[in-house]
Image (cartoon, rainbow over all chains, first blue to last red; front, side, top):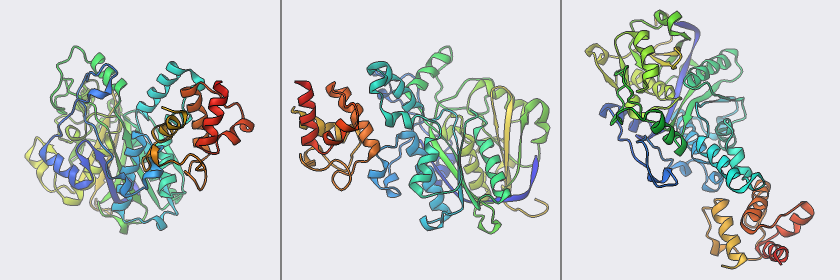
Amino acid sequence: MNLLTQPVAIQGIGCVGAFGRGAAAFVEAMQRGTTAPQYHDDLHGDGSAYFPAFLATTDGLDDYVPKRALRRLDHYSRLALLGGCLALDDAGISADQRDRIGVIVASGYGASATTFGFLDSVLDDGDHCASPTAFSNSVHNVAGAYLSMQLGIHGPNLTLSQFEMSVSAAIYNAVCWLQQGRVDTVLVGGVDEHCAVLNYCYRRYFAEEIEPQRIEPFAFNRQTAIPGEGAAFLVLSRDPKKSRYGYIDAICAGHVEQRAESVIQRSPILLGADGHRNSGQWYQRCVGNPKTSCSAVYGSLPSGQAFDLVAAALMVRDQQCHAACDRIEEAAQIRQITSIKCASDGQFGAVRVSRWSGKGR
Amino acid sequence: MTTKEKLKQILVEDLNLEDITPEEIEDDEPLFGEGLGLDSLDAVELVVLVQKHFGVEIKDMEEGRPALQSINTLAAFIEDKQE
């Protein structure tokens, strides 16, 4: 792991997923071990549901943003906005304290439902009748734009899409901004949504597989992924005194074959394994025996590492492993935990969260 | 359904005006600014919606500005073009 010369403080967290919204709902679901996936018949024109999914709602977003201001936002942007609002609220950053905040959003799929809906409208009615609002909502950085506009954030704004590596790349950029002094605070997180096309793809790609009833993150050689959607955000600060959930004090990325030993260490490891066999093999090589995972709670999505980082922050704050773990020593007091996400090609991104930022961490 | 009723329904449903019902929109209420509170992005969306639902094209600002004043003016424009 590459130790940061200046660890960054985790000041706030926010998340929304099939488990509900907020830290309490997330912890409760982790301790329960899973969230029930759902079938949504309205996902398809023929009324069929092809695959279970962990679906999220954005109820309560109008507690933070006026309903009228939300009318152009699709589900994808609403997920991101709710995650961001919860994180800023948790960090205690009010509307008049947002001068030197940056926004970084990571997404693997982007606004997939709106994108495919827009393309369908072009096919159905011709490009002259395509909705300009749907087009503007179909670009990947729309969620970041709405976060800045609706929350009055005027700092730099960046959207990263590198499929499963999106979140670790976003954290790396956030740390760079903070260390350079470009901003004092960064609202950074991940968002992905489920849609009919993705649902159809799951059924087609995994047609020969037994339909999973739950994600089994440690069954590395089996396909047990169930798609999920949601958003998870962290508020990171340069000021160590603002830490409420510990610090990000080390990051690491590369290919498992070249750098796997660099993430094998004494601290517990929070695996981003989410039931996909093609990435499961790399987790097995990366860390040997399984450690802990909470993907069964939020589902399989490219930006799932954002949920893992929120989970890591909560575990470090509470000094307790909330997620299911297979070895008794993992349940001991958590003072440090490393989130690892592997891609199907063996690339990995690792981020360590520690309770302390000083020497000897 | 009359042109005016259909227009009001389109405004509420396609522009996602969740805080108002079609029946609450007055025929002579200004669509933009102080009236219904629509903005320039809504104007572009409305041009596309009129073409999609009524087959009527608003070609430029010269046509659009007077037509997009209210439900009354927009309905009159549509019915005039459809004749």
